[in-house]
Length: 284
Ligand SMILES: Nc1ncnc2c1ncn2[C@@H]1O[C@H](COP(=O)(O)OP(=O)(O)OP(=O)(O)O)[C@@H](O)[C@H]1O
Ligand SMILES: [Mg+2]
Image 1 (cartoon, rainbow, N blue to C red):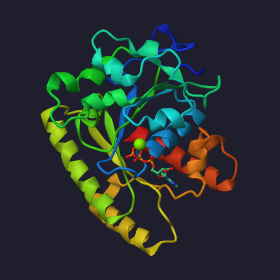
Image 2 (cartoon, rainbow, N blue to C red):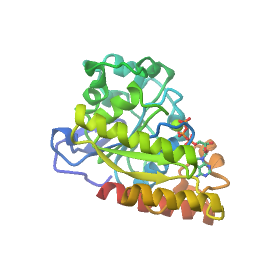
Image 3 (cartoon, rainbow, N blue to C red):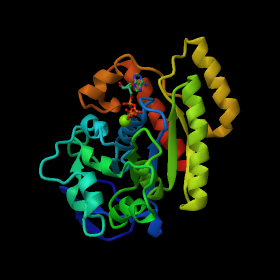
């Protein structure tokens, strides 16, 4: 495990880390929410693609699966075992120790650090539009004492309700995901406005790090038209390169594999896209 800072050593989930601490209290760890108002556009896929790139690059990473469907936990090859899921930890955020309830992704298999705060339907109790300030702090409270990671990726549910807002409140950056389609582009614009309002009301440090265009069919004239539209609407916020549609992406996810570990040229191409996106997001 490469060292990741000058902090003290702690015993993490199953290994010893040299630690850095939460950027909110002054260090280098980057907390990134992966969000979109619209469902099914690829938030979980982008979260896991970035996690795969981070693992390949030796960046110690924690994925927080905040979606009650817990798809990221499945794709990352976790087994719940004896750990408590993120929903129940949020309920007891002031007392709970998140570090005691993280589980390693099977992707890491002893090489590198990729851990998961596993999701469950229970977190759905917080996915309300009317969550108060105290509740919005719950995830931040859980993350603040956690050390040993350079990157935290939060997979959000497809809404701007309580869970996504809780994620934003704990984050330095938001990465938005959009497919190149009419409604997805409109939804991205609404989400950017919501981020702006959230920054002003709750979290001035929150940075929209960029928009990932996912599932792009490079041979589709409709997709190329929508991509041009996105470039002119969002300018440099639209991150390059775009993520192409991959015929066997579902198969890779279903097998709980990292795209970087999957054979074949098309998987290698998408892995390279995620390497570049991770670098762009870490620079943003
Ligand atoms: N680049 C891609 N190529 C092919 N299929 C993809 C790609 N990205 C995502 N998909 C597929 O699209 C579907 C939706 O993706 P995903 O679950 O990542 O979206 P989501 O935004 O997290 O959905 P939800 O809003 O339900 O959480 C999945 O079946 C996934 O396998
Ligand atoms: Mg998802």
